[in-house]
Image 1 (spheres, rainbow, N blue to C red):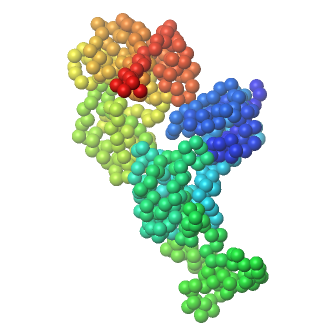
Image 2: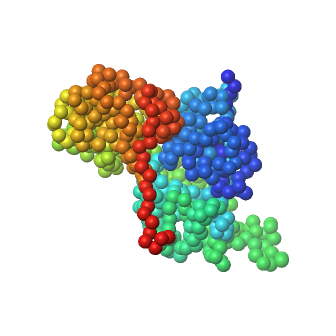
Length: 547
C-alpha cells in the first residue's frame, strides 16, 4: 500500500491574496480536505479533492483522528486552519494523535506543516504598526486551559509591558473572560492605552474599531475578533495604532545627520535604561550598588535573580549560596464525566449529593444537562479514584463526548416496570460505546411516549408487550422533526440485537461528527429501513402590503 501524507495547512486570513503558493499546491494535491466548516467554505474554490469533510467547532480531535486514518489508508490529506496552523491551530493536535499511535518520522506517515499568516499579523497590518516591539498572544478560551492559568498569563504580560493580542476573546457562553482581562490590564496599563478590535480580517464582513483599554467593552467583540492592546509607548496617529521600535530613541527620526553615530549609541550614557556591562544591573535605581563598586560574576548575578523570584536559596557543593530552581506552573488536569442516579431513576440520595459536592470542591463545576445527567468537571490527576467514589454511592457513569447515552422514562410507573429492564440491558451492553457523534437512545415504557423518546436519535417505545422503533430525530433547529418510525411489534428478545446492528452500521460508515439523522438522510437506508423525509417546510404568509 502506498504511504499517505498529511499537510497541515495554514491559509491565513482567508482571502486568495494572502494564502501562500505552497498552501494552494498542498490543497490541490490532496484527495481529502478536513476542517472546520467555516474554514472549508473559505477555501472551497481552491480545492479539487474527491472528498471534503467539514465539522463543527470544538471537534478538532476527531478531525485530526480522521486525517491520520485517511493517511494510513494511503491518501493525501490536508487538515486546514485559518491563520497559521501552528498558532492555536491543528498542527500540534495532528502530531499528538500520531504520537499516541507510536508514529516515527523516519518510517511513518509524512507530515508537512504549511505556515500561514497568523491573526496577530493580519490584524496588525490593518490598524497600523502595533506589533513593532515585544508582543505575545493569549487565548481567552478556557475550554482547554484553566482560567487560573490564563489570569496569570494576562497579568504577567501586563506587568512586562508586552503588546498583547487576545484570541478567542468572547463567545455566546463565554462573556466574563474579556471583562476579567480588561480588569487585570487596567491594574498595570493606562485607561487610555490604544486598543484595536479587528473582526474577520481580510474577509467579506471585516470590521475595524480603534478604541482604548477603558472603552473597549463598549464595542462589539466576538469569537471572530482579535483584540490588540498596545504597550505603554503605543500611540494613535491619524487613526493608526503605532508602537515605536524602542522605548527611547537611539536615533532621531527626521534628521539627515544622526546625533549619535553607531559606535556612540553603544556607550552607557546613550542607553541609561540598559544593563550595566560590569554589574549586569540596570543603572537606574541601583546607584547605591554602583557606589559600593559591586563586581560580581554573571553566575552570581543569575543566582541572585533566581533567588529574588523564588524567594529561597540553597547551598552548592562548594559552599556557595545558590538560588533554588524555579518551579514551573503545574498544569491542572480536568476530568470530565457524566453521572445520573440510573437509566430510569431521577431520585438522588443525600449521600450522592454530598459526594458530588466533596469531589467537585471549589475549583470544579457541575451542570445538569437536558439528558438528565450531571456533567462534572473535576480537577484531579487520579480519574479512576473519582470513578470508584462515584460508583460506590450508586451513580451510573457516562463518558462525555461522542458516545452512546441511554435514558428511559422516569415520570410514572405505568407499564414501565416490564420495559425498563430492557433499557438497562442496552445500557449495560452498549452504553458508553464510542461513535462518530454523540447518540441518544430514548426509551418509553408505554404507548403514551410522554418521555419524548421519538425525539432522540433512536427512540424505543414499549407497547402491547412488544417494541416500536424510531430512527433519526432532529430535535432542534428550524427543520426539527421527530424520528422516523421504522418497525413495530419487535419481540423483546430481538430488540437488543437489532439496535446493535444499527449502531454497528452507523459506526462503520458514518463520517466523523455526522449525526445519525444526517447519516440516514445521506445513505437513504439503514439495514432494511428506507429513509423518509420527516422535516416540514415552513412557508411564511405574505405581508399585508404585498412585499
